[in-house]
Image (cartoon, rainbow, N blue to C red; front, side, top):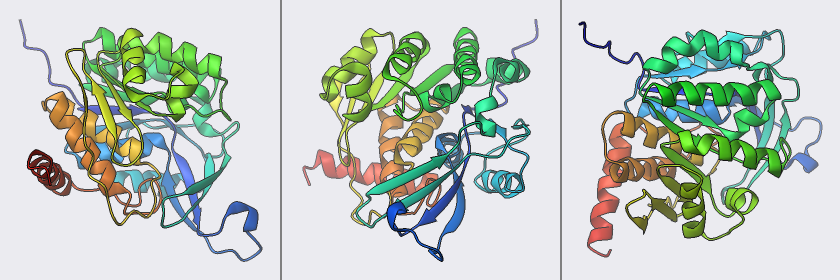
Length: 329
């Protein structure tokens, strides 16, 4: 009997890619002539970029538009080390958002994504990707993806089930957005997908209050585990992370970046990095330590993919922070 073939990818990321329009002027104060710059982001691209930087063979599973921005969008993903060979096209525009952030990390967003290309994600796409999903070590997806449309929600569940059935790892971030979906719908998706999930990453208080009825990280983790997730990581702002792996619960100190510019995508960076390191054989504690370090470093750049730390940088910060914590510095 021939040995099983090696996984083609360590990490697959299923979700939406967005055009990012970045300005230093608050949206309500924007006037004719307000300067802005274009980049590319979205939680899927942010997580995929982080996974690739963390050493994983990473591919993006997404639907992008047929407008002129699709070419530089995919080029940017490729430059970030992400394989875009499996990205599909739709006769729709790409979704976009306006981002305003200040040096304290505060952010304001205005989105244009209704009926965008990403919302056409459907089970038929998952069927075309099934050979990849059943051979991949891991999949990252989110509640944002599931909230884009009814077909996108079905696609998220189909992809999660395919990876789980094949013995792969699933990381799920509820990433609740009230403008995209109602609480009942988001809770229902979480309840369906949690039993398939190796790592549930959620934020507190935002996701925890909306979906788990608590603003306490430990309680949020316990309730995520009760839904069926094997492990739950709860991020609770700068410097705070709570991990429940089913055998022990603990607060994990997070390195604080004194040069924070913009926290956009930091949670996605954590998710992508942690999943990559798990796929490459790290323990959960070590993978989470790398994820926390990468997220901390990422806030030095503007936008979701403005600064994606290298594995060398991430590993160095994780090790230094571990030593400092152990020594009580």
